[in-house]
Image 1 (cartoon, protein in one colour):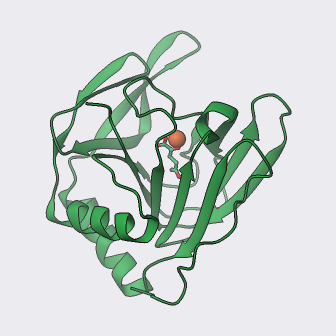
Image 2 (image 1 turned 180 degrees about the vertical axis):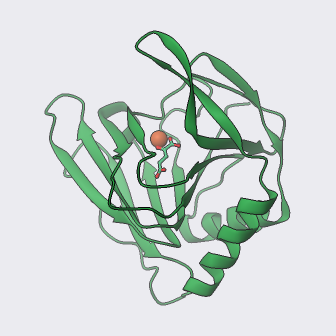
Image 3 (image 1 turned 90 degrees about the vertical axis):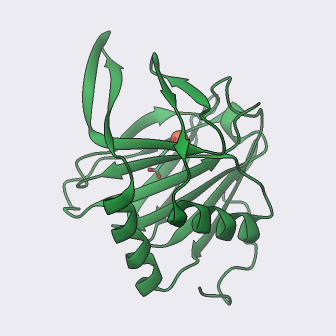
Length: 200
Ligand SMILES: O=C(O)CCC(=O)C(=O)O
Ligand SMILES: [Fe+2]
């Protein structure tokens, strides 16, 4: 772990939200270790999405883990959380220590290449704690991540590096959308973990 590169940094949003980019919190050896373990040990499944009113299977893979078999509903599908793996519990602990927040669940995404991304949305489902923090850990290929204000349409973007932590909190999800834009320039995979709090 890089203990010298983790001082709380300033808010990257100009108003109406709180987003902190910590940069890489792991050296590349640990980041690669976690990437390999997660690729192997997570139960990756194709996601479903409603696109132009039609239920489609996405290329991106997802997984859902938590303290309890929490039900999480989005895009009209409901998933029950699987029990934490050893690596996920280690990562949860590290991110809780870094951020000073507590989480009870984690949604994982596997993007095989840059051509897979995620379109504009906010993580404001009713199962999630209102204004709860979301800790986002990125492993593998560096990808651009963008925010767009729901009213002013102002955008802000940040590159999420291998081993990096991004913390979204406060009113961010109420006021801003975010997305992972697709790009043909990146041909290698990326895993993203978003640690969340489900209301119990
Ligand atoms: O892949 C990412 O960095 C973001 C994923 C995301 O926004 C989500 O899972 O809600
Ligand atoms: Fe999200």
